[in-house]
Length: 251
Image (cartoon, rainbow, N blue to C red):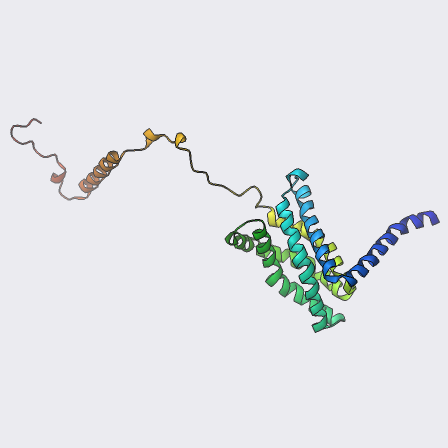
């Protein structure tokens, strides 16, 4: 029984030690720690999304897409969010009521106003798409993404702001965010991959030149249609009858 208890407690001991080490590292190198944590977890989320949900081999992974997601994770999910939450703490303070205020501010203001638009615009631009394409993608996916993010982060942030120690917040968020990024990366790319249609003009060798009417044929056809229209609309049918041959001419 004692042996079994020690075996079960060992993984928790390892996790506790790792968490303490990360907390010390984050406390000493806050911005650098957040930068690495956000980039690694967001990039890993996209990599797993491609190789699992999209069933790609490693050699077929879109590394530019993964790099775009990792860059967003480094700069936004890591650096910007860490410093934004520190600002929340200094302005709003700590405690149960303050945690509720920070949760509502983050979920109902930050996510729809800043996070979701920045995610789609930046990752699309980093992948080489135009600003117009990025805006179209954002408009198309905005509502479903905000709905997803609200459902995930409302309970998570309530716990994060009220229970999780400040040095561990980025790690906690990125741990939950790994699962969120699986859904977000999959959503962001579910209808984009393989649908970049390139319009290729037909080769001259594939065009049947004989099937194209000449200018003379087009003019003759137009005159014929005008004559038919005139004949059917005039009240007098005499104008439509063929002219009598002049003397000395045959029929």
